[in-house]
Length: 79
Image (tube, rainbow, N blue to C red; front, side, top):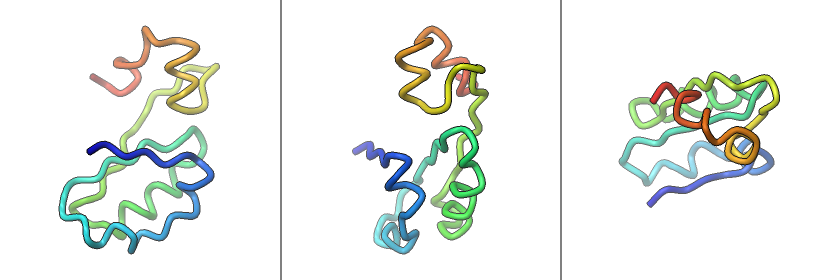
């Protein structure tokens, strides 16, 4: 099942909380929080992957992208 963690929860998440999950985990960091996501994914090894997002100028997170420019949603993720 997909799970999301907001910026507030995401920055304070303990990577060991995912130790029991043996599946690939994708992290989509907000603009400017890429280094936090990278630290979590490093701890997770093969299970963790940080998604690089090409944020439009007026968007700082996935919600902004969805609300302000849904037409750019797929292209911003390289899909």
